[in-house]
Length: 129
Image (cartoon, rainbow, N blue to C red; front, side, top):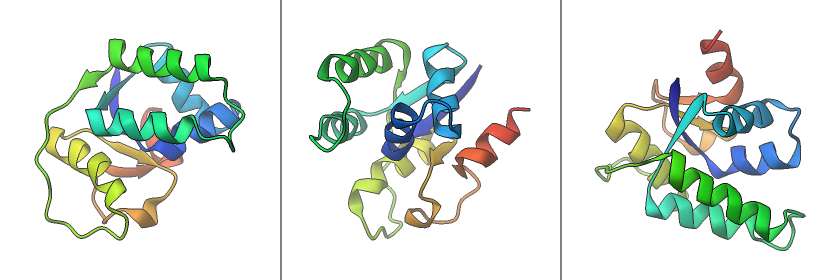
């Protein structure tokens, strides 16, 4: 079983297009083949974004996904990094990943500092083969 921190864009893309690479990551989470590491702030970010009106996701489906993450994932402790971020909301994902030596999967590599644990979806999936 693998572990990862998942950027919100991966959840959005996975729900939007289940047949794409982010959908594969989401399927792995739901099948128990990938354990998601999270913090309270990460869960709040997921809820805020996934409940936005511009997305067609049913509230009950989003709430079920968030409940699944809390039940099956790992609530992580972390240390706040001193690395500068253009968007401070990205920091929590990086800090949880780096503090716990767990990969961070994102669709927006440019939002994060270069680090061996910060991976695009394709790089993460190819590392599992």
